[in-house]
Image (cartoon, rainbow, N blue to C red; front, side, top):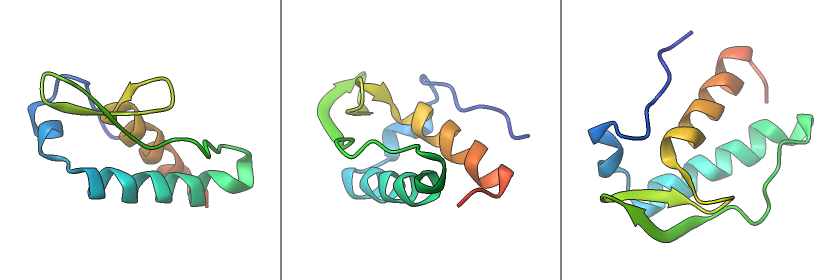
Length: 77
């Protein structure tokens, strides 16, 4: 398993809104067979120290990346 992404990782500041939106689309597709869906998830207009938040409880991009990593490694979706 890969090392989890930490919310304070500096490279997370480089993610743009279109990139995060693309990751959310991937999450929807990979998670669909397992009921992992957040239809209302979107890039938030809020940031923490320059890092974008994902609006499903205003979580960090790190959380989104960690969830996608788990789905990818498990071969789901």
